[in-house]
Image 1 (cartoon, rainbow, N blue to C red):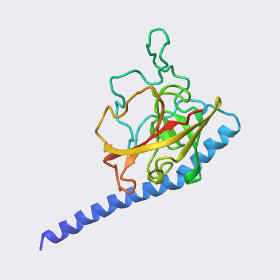
Image 2: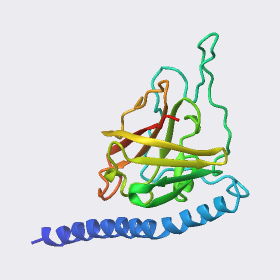
Image 3: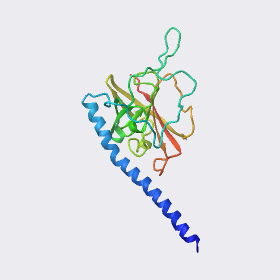
Image 4: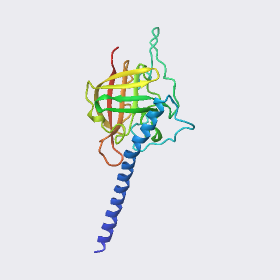
Length: 225
């Protein structure tokens, strides 16, 4: 008989924890479109920067491991015609700056793209992984987003679907090549390669409650001009 109160207490604790998670997820789903809309308005009004002060760092349900790339050439590299050497991408933005906007016609979605992948940046839209290629550069351009907000329907995209990335330099169009699922603890997930590649990363499973264990990687290649 003494075990009954303990069982009820344990059940109550589990229920309370689940309720907190659900409430937080609900708040994020409700608040994220407002943050994204503000960022899109700022972009359309010609304001590139996030404003005074750098956003706070931190990752809730982080979509990115500490190390994404293999040991090959550096991201954003443009080989020299003479030596075939490559150079690192120089930071063109500060954390929190607006980089552009991402349009996904199949999903009828337009998302702001912000420099950095901390929680403050991902609340506002898709985050550009610092150190990955920039639009127009050879290499892997990596964007991260939360699975329950900006990248909620990412799994609906199929090979052949189009993705457009608008920056101040123009519009870059990519065609989806495919997707794969990896463990959240995996590193060295991406090849740098010699193409202009766009990779979208989010947590997986999409409907998982709590911190999702895996990562969903969708890859697209820039359309030939």
